[in-house]
Image 1 (cartoon, rainbow, N blue to C red):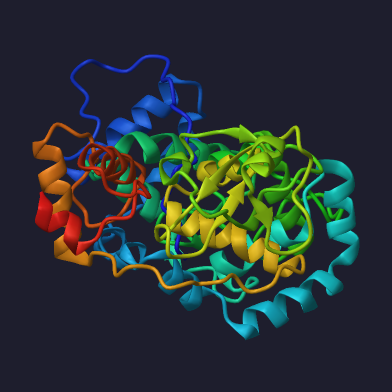
Image 2: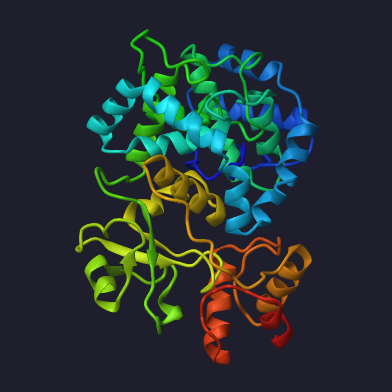
Length: 391
């Protein structure tokens, strides 16, 4: 499971004592305070007690949370690790097997099969590996941990709501280390809001019913802003003399405007000329080139890693018939400690690059682009050893 959790709403408690801690401290005391908060906000007292009684702290969850080094890989490396011929073949088989479900998704939500198939593949290998972490333990442990409590506290209360509805067992429900459940890995709050009984058995069972999981995932994407019937990503070629500083999600032009500049689809034709879009250079001017349409931004609501998002979006296009991207010959990028050194330099120059984690995120890309412009270098947002040395 490769997701960096981002789907969480803020839980507003009805009456919380001012002295209650929001994270850290005694785990037993923390559980008791969460239980009190749940009851104060309207949850049944007996159900709340039963829910929290058996929950225990999980060191294995915290270890999993700390080791996500794969997100440091550049796009070409990362995508080649995740997209195998077997996953492509299995995706097409699953698309055919569940054709009626995907027809319903297209009819109800306007989402192409490849989009959900890609998530299904990356999250659980089409349901084969859904995780064996106790979900209740995982959520409360991560809410107790002070790294990202604001994400996980609401999910604990949502899991309690599912428990009260009969759709969650704190003793037996399992999933990913970050609390996601089922074939496409959805958090409790998202299940509450977007769960769909796709197979008509009167229950929403995301672990065993592909119809429930896929339709729930589709409803969630729609809820997050998916624009029906529109594309999300397409590989393109750029003209000689292209202004590299125009690449990136910060620059939006209509498809027609890009076409006037000489941008062309590498396969087929570009979509509706009126659509807003951006040019993406995940590994700089020497690597692959994509056009991102408005639906691409919805992927960031599912996951916050640019590399994961681009890979999932690209895999969706492959499952829809797109060819393998032209990898080109990008300049060698920075690795682990080099990237951290670059981020430290940029931070010292006043740029907001977020956490010094060795991951080329949006903040680091934007800072690199700005520095490249100031230095008179090709501003393709791709950091190299030469740039680090210059700094």
